Length: 487
Image 1 (cartoon, helix red, strand yellow):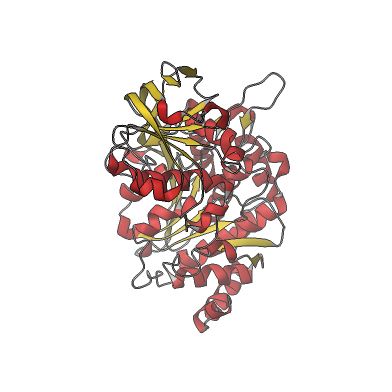
Image 2 (cartoon, rainbow, N blue to C red):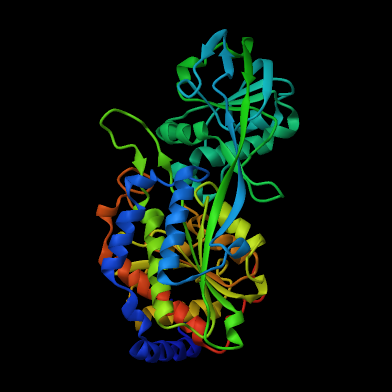
């Protein structure tokens, strides 16, 4: 971090310190408000706020009502707090049938269909051993069977169990798709089998995307990708057998929503510019229904902590407006693929050129009370050294977190920088950074509930976000985008 402590940073530090001494807005950030709001938003009442469900819409309505009560102005579409967008979901139908060696396979027990496709297959099997076979075999019109193996994968995220299967599937599809296989069947190795249950859960829910050329997670549109966990289902004479499959896909369009509120600035000129706070509403909904077991993924840290932090920052800016206006955007459908932020970055409700910076938060209430992380600090992820300087100065003047810089490294196996809502804004050329307290064992489990949040730490993180925004809202100059930045 030492290379970032320039003279400009020290000047920002002095500026923020002076502001804090007279900053009446900071006193509006109260631990009791954060705790009350978080227990409400992460309550079972909202059933995990899954994207594209009534539960997400209910949570959005609750956030909009809180913004209204604070006194923030609506800044969504048509004078409302809401910006709706279409979320498209494709899911493999229970009517689908898959038969291997004349034996029917039970969908979601014996076999995963990795991505929804409409497909009818009646093809001979061919078993491939390793990359040499993959690169040289004639697979046209055949159902390819291959085992998961990290051979040939250089991406450092292959070390992450959550990324292992997906990276291998993407690599093998890239190598095979142009050769015309009728289907590709992956068989677990010892590593992939450890992620079978989680992967099954996500595959069963289907894929999500948006029309209009926006990012989607589809690997290949017309080739069935199957995953069998039990190697005993693949016999030694597989090359003399066939795969027969009739895969049917159900297609749905759901509404998802961004909640958008603002506090107008006090300066006659600068109030037409905006500092944008970013967080996401949704989490993972209801899963694993079983008598007596918790099935609701409340998403207290992910990402109710940031939602309530934005409400607290709203109270602070309402009490003491900045010279610039402040925009509060609670995004929908982040967990399904950053769709709410992608939509807003493409369809902002204020002029895109008027957004001077984006302060995004994701998971800010767990782990050691004295540690945090700021992503987008170092190249190649940094897109504004000016913005980074302001955030570092705010930390030095306020909460004094020890910052973990390892998660901003492009070799970090989780690829954390690319997994939250600042990303579409950074790609749109807007100065953007990402505040987080990082992963923990309760991530994306039913254990991520309000009782496990460190509210003292959440308060400190909220203060850091606010102090950063305070400087950005009040200083004369807006942060510049680094020359040559590109993701």
